[in-house]
Length: 207
Image 1 (cartoon, one colour):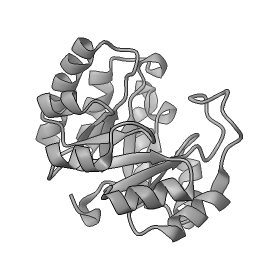
Image 2 (cartoon, rainbow, N blue to C red; image 1 turned 120 degrees about the vertical axis):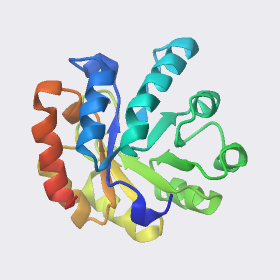
Image 3 (tube, rainbow, N blue to C red; image 1 turned 135 degrees about the vertical axis):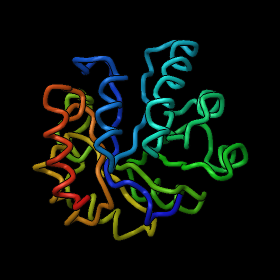
């Protein structure tokens, strides 16, 4: 998938913060369009994660919504996902590419060096954060902020997604810093506000 067709909004799942089944949330997001979905449920067993991945794939595929699996290459392959999102340490991009030559491969990074390494290794995009305070990482170091985001965006040629405390109201600042797109967790896990939140994201991202 080339940059020109890469959605600029990424929904990252988190069952613990969702107030409805993930299947319902992903259905609404896929129907609205303009996003991709990263299945990231580290608390699930491999079997349950695989079953959920298959269900989400059935939902996303008719809408041409890219589905990425976090870290688990075996499940990404078995569920026929569109790609894999890698943590900063672990399976390499080069190894992943051997199994998913046409897949979308992204990587979480927390430094300029990490972004450079990911770009050289052939990542399709990097996810950088956390940019703002976030409930997903309450005990982490202070947010990296917009200045670091801007420096990183200027240093690489591949798309950079900002993550961490992302809301529609904060998205424009990330784009102004050079981000290609944004990734959201908490903002997209409340189903009663999901439609309006997606519309707000789309307006800022001009989707």
